[in-house]
Image (cartoon, rainbow, N blue to C red; front, side, top):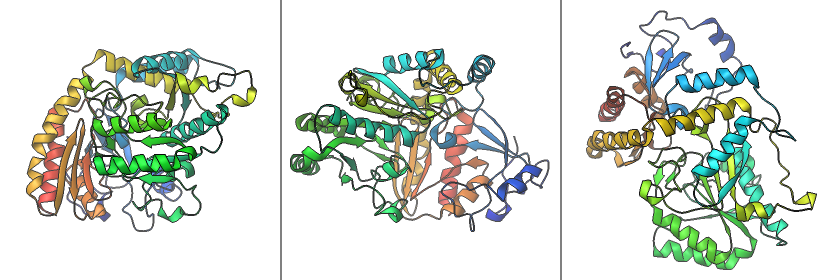
Length: 443
């Protein structure tokens, strides 16, 4: 393994590897690629990646970084897993894609059946899309049309929660925390939704009940990230919150939607956060659930919106206008579905949830020293999620320091966090946690 590099933010493309010069494709591409969440004028240049393996990212200059965020929480089995790679190669030879408009292929059929079997209750009708934001938009559209098809007009609003994040499209921005900053610029463009406090205690529960009593006839659904509000700041809540939401939704006759784009597929310690409480999940069944990110283990874009029988029955009709009029071009892509099926194979064959528990134990112990550091507000761990919250943060400086330590950690907001691959080796995990303690101790 190559050692850490000592350069600052402007030195990230130089290192002690095979060459200090970036590859030819890099310079030409950087003049045209528009990066996400990045002020292109002032930010440090992106790191040129040439190869991935396991929990390692190899840069063009030969350095290797230990990935602490699994490519935005997707690469749950690590990069380049041979079982997934072989499944993709086989599918590419047979059928890379065919539209689901009037057609169906084996991989989508198998995956839909497996997801239905995986999810609790009667969540058994799967609508595929190609990103988490779209999956949430489909869930919202589905909920509104559920009421229309049921002969109920006017239910077009959603209750979502402070600290929540559900995507960057126009519809999903409207159900994100309105004050967290990223989407405040678009006020006026976005549809007005109802943002409330999570019912964590009696006071907030009573406030939610009053809200639903006063405005229930205009609300189509309640939308929440179960157990962990991810991109809003890795904020945790317990199963009791979700039980209160289920009870409130039932009292008001409102649909309950769980956004499991982040939490699904083992991240919190259960296969899905709405799973049985006996396996580390909440044991609360929503009416609609969205899945994405780790669905294909970080190999190809794919997401799903899964509806209960109650919801789907409102669309089962002789009236063609009762059909769900939505259809992403690449929905149910055969290659992506093959990757997802291969990923589910690995969850069945290999001890992934045991690995998550081991990661949780390591994060709990190894990040504990951060509690006593100046500026640290909180340290929290759930499943394969470790979070250090700070009172203030210099994101650019921290990212550069982590690269110097040979790790890829991407802070945001006021948090430094880890969401590693479940297959990460003990030594690599220790280097990640050690880098966080070291960097935060000397910032």
